View 1 (cartoon, rainbow, N blue to C red):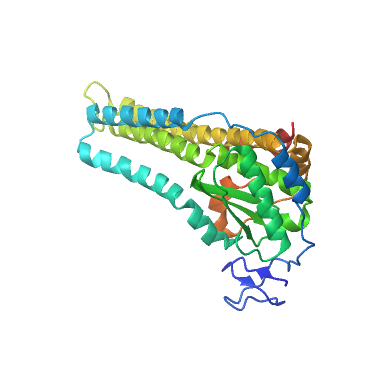
View 2: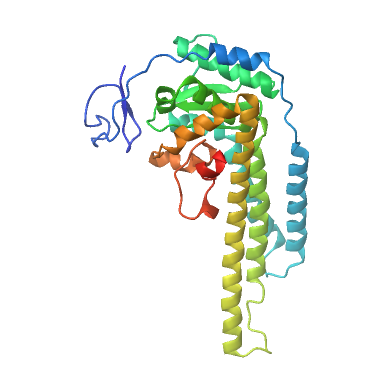
Length: 334
């Protein structure tokens, strides 16, 4: 059955029409036709016959840094005279943490809602391609040492992409676009699946939230420091104090942007790590083969999916590299 997707309301249209019957907008995407079912049986068997990889690294260090940053932030807030009540400042700080960890907690549910992911039911496969894809993910799960198979799904999109998200290793989802399933061969799909399983095995989603929480604490401190000395000291003239205000404002901007650069740099580093582990889980040449395919694809996300670009194997090229969550595909191929 063919279908198209409306970019305005994200409705999946199963009839060959040019206008969305839901919102009346022109359907921009071409109709997708199902390709021949992919068969991953031989690849899955080869993965299962190979040696299990024990993913190194512990979350304890990441939690330790987060707790240390949080403790330092709370202590400094306690002793910085801002004229605000300590309880109010702690409330503001906790609000930021709440949204960061709340987003992580609901990331799996929300991604399924936003992408209209069709989950594969291992008790009732709709076709052989679903069975084969699920067996591939199960084989990668075993080799990576995960104790539970993540949810596996497919979402309708022309882009060649996939993503993995979830709160923990045992509460995750891996989803593949129909564009990826139709356009890539079994080897390239298996390599991208290995990349997504690597993100889950490395607990990258949780690590990034811990990093964002630490950087948020630092940004909060910068804001608190900027509130200090609101009144003009007697020893400074009006002109001198005006220059101090401008310098302080510029420092806040530079420091705040530096925090964003650090966060983006860590995200790019985690992508490299996922590529490296994927090469071990499956095949280095297959990973290069998959990245070559991605290099010729220009992903164009639907409006409500752009916030999730960081979770995907491929993302649109940005302006400056320091603001990108993904390293360039040329760098990833090196």
